[in-house]
Image (cartoon, rainbow, N blue to C red; front, side, top):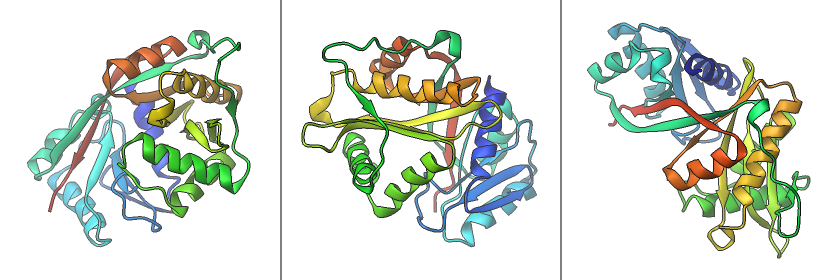
Length: 252
């Protein structure tokens, strides 16, 4: 499955407003932000970069004033991590990912107390979701007009956004899934505002988004998780551990 996940990473980065391909790498840039979580690179499956290839990739970031950074499934390109480490890159994190296929999907049964999952329609909905996810992830990123616009673009370009409405009309929690590519789709940003946790919101939006991608023709949906609590939530919906993804960057 690592090759499918890595092939998706390549296809997804090619959707960025600016794309640079060099030495077996694809780098995707969005001029609206300098965030390293939006502007990063990934290798082609099976890539075997030389020192010169890595240097050219670094230069593509440096000339834009950005930190050289990559995200990828190392099993799909085993030669890449050693080449990056030799050039001075350091590991930020290694995350496990999980995969769900149509026959494993378990949608929560609707009933009293089951969260009602909605599709955002208005600008207020998208803004509320962006703000709720910022709060859910403890300020790892700030809510912004650009973040709101990215959510809307994702939904309008074949992906999906889902959320559970809070009693005040805002967002209690939500998530987003990218448009399918190479038969799979990435579900990301599953977040619930702290005051609404423990109510089944994460499981409900995860199931709804996964179901939407299967209806759109995806053969699988994958996501990353952190901690046993998150893993158990996703397992209840039908996701199973499949591999790891590496986050690596060249610090100044």
